[in-house]
Amino acid sequence: MVEASKPLSAVVFGSTGACGRELVAQIAASPIWASVTTIGRRPLSPPPPESSPGKLKQITVNMDTLESNPQVKSALSGVDSVFCALGTTRAVAGSAEAFKKVDYEYVAAAGRAAKKAGVPHFGLVSAQGANANLWASDWKPFHGLLYAKTKGLAEESIKGHFTYVTIMRPGLLDRGDLDRPLEKVWGKFMSSVPVSKVAAALIADAENFANGGASDEKVKIWNMKEICNFES
Image (tube, rainbow, N blue to C red):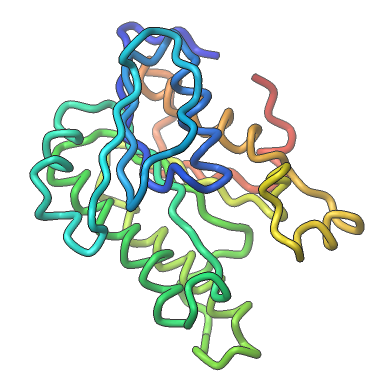
């Protein structure tokens, strides 16, 4: 934990997923952060404990009109960090196009809105193997390539638009009770990283930047090994 020189404020997109829940919970419990606002299609329920009353605010929006929503503009004004953990699966989304809409288009829209508001730091939960330059197809047998390319495109939509960008590239996630069926199977054979550690490392990097401790690099990419080795 890095002691920031002033109380910090954050906005979280994608707060109802495993990583997003952890981000909100850790920020809400930390005295370093004065406020945290979630923005999404539905509120986080139940809300996490707060270190002070009224610290958490939740805004429900139509993600397709995110950039024109006055509540979003107001929430982003003056915040120190925006954290984005938006993501779904092809099975849940229902199609390749619907998957790309959530994992790329909504991420890019959140980035544009944050940039327009003058937010200095953007933290993105991406994935191991993300690569915007990969060949990919919407054909289901090639979804692994589409997934990696979409994550890479989401990263590229954020890079270069903020004073500092943090990108987390975890491999297999340990989501606890929220683990997806395939993740439970693969988790028996592959190493995984708890979502709590992904969130903690991302928050720590944001705090370090806010306190003037970030390196000269404009973009910090955390790979799976770095995330696993992180100690708060």
